[in-house]
Image 1 (spheres, rainbow over the protein chains, first blue to last red):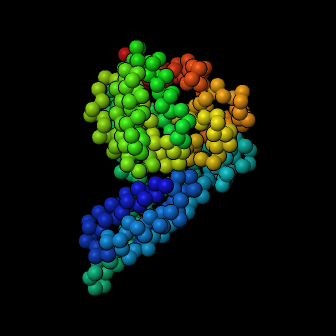
Image 2: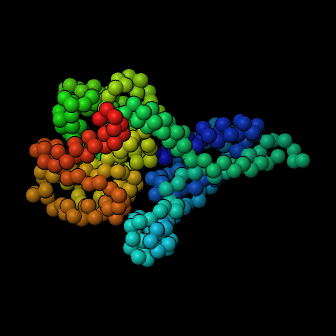
Image 3: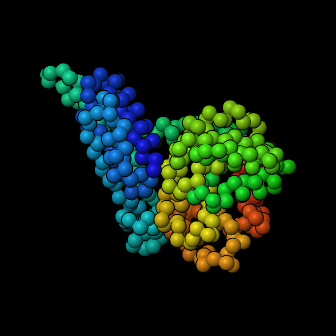
Length: 119
Length: 222
């Protein structure tokens, strides 16, 4: 259960970006969580609820995009999504693979409000 | 006024950046850094005690121990005549690179091997690089041969799998080939060693591997 550390790190980044852009409030934080990132999306939600209190993102929505684990075969070129994390091509069973996605833990974007009227 | 900002930044980026700095600094000095991960009680400290005994006359080694509480593991290593630093995380389930960075200035610069023993946990430590060149995951035979796929992150990010407590194999329903296959399914490039820190079985091969890996780092003075 290191989701709390992950969210604490995320909030440091978000607060720094908000300050840099002179935001009054952060309204949306969108992240991508790979199936093999080592963290659980539901626990990130709970951790975010705890950590956001009293911060610039207190009322922000945490949007989590779950990214499946996907590999590309170097032999036959097929791409396969493997929810069993088997590192073998679903087509030809080759283990010469490259990882396409699934290990990422990425802050994709944030939405902020400057508190000033729209132009 | 609302504003959207595309960031596209690794959430663990700060940790990974510090880890890369540690890795570069250590490898420049010819220090082979290893990160040992396993569940509690798989035999990380017992293996390090044996490695300390076997390596200390030929090489300079140091150990960083991570635990939630107590100085016990560092004391066990020091009893072997090897310098050891204990990090007590006070509850945190894993080590982070910044914790290692705080200890590094205390470690002598001319060591050959730096072993980092992570907090006993097969889940969280896997997400945090510590600056290691070689990530070692241990699975002890009493834990069962079905563990690799239950903890895919730990086994898929490791470079080396040590199947420990091999001396217990005759007494356990542990299928060595199944454990190896499960791990290799997750990670075909995994190097696997079967050993017992208690009897010393399989230890020579592992030590040869460590020495070769260290030599590959700095062929000039190996």
